[in-house]
Amino acid sequence: MKIIDSKIGSSKDIMNLDETLLEELEPNDDPILHLYTFEKKSATFGHFLSPSDYIDLKKAEKFDVELAKRPTGGGMIFHFSDLAFSVLIPSEHHGYFTDPLKNYVFINQIVMKAIERFLHQSPNLDLLPEESAPLDPSSKAFCMAKPTKYDIMIEKKKIVGAAQRRKKQGYLHQASISLFMPDFALIEEILLPNTKVLEAM
Image 1 (cartoon, rainbow, N blue to C red):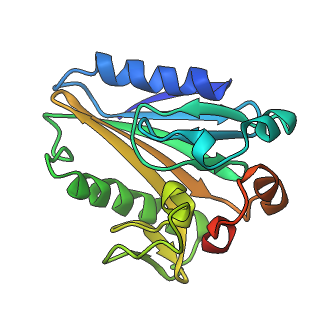
Image 2 (image 1 turned 90 degrees about the vertical axis):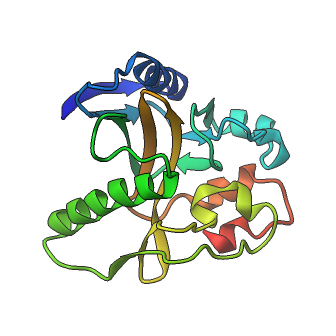
């Protein structure tokens, strides 16, 4: 596996680099692990999601939360207290499947092993067998508020969020591991009112 550590950067630059890595990926390349750190509190959102439908953009700017569109799909995720990374799997690799759920299983099983090794124990980790219903329509738009099939769970809480984009030459898997509880007070400030997003998270 090729490892790229792009160090600290803006969320937009990091997302742009991931998109470039996918565009330049060749079917016979080695898989790529892209490591990075957001230079400030950030929120990334799926390619087809409009953040203004769910958060107050002026308040996000006021509290210096940087927003960036991901080249993948999925909901919004707050990068306040997480370890974010990306994996690119070329199409000739044994971990490439046309069924995206199989791709999630392939990556998440590796992530589960890494978490167990890091914790020096075997916590009650499991892949969610079936997708759960969102608490409300807004919760569906937030990655960590809406567990989906094959997400990594610990004690019935989602701890890893991910989104993918697949092309003929390979796929990009962008992921976020929750390290500790996020700043819920800040999230509440920038969320639009009258949702169950915080409760779901």
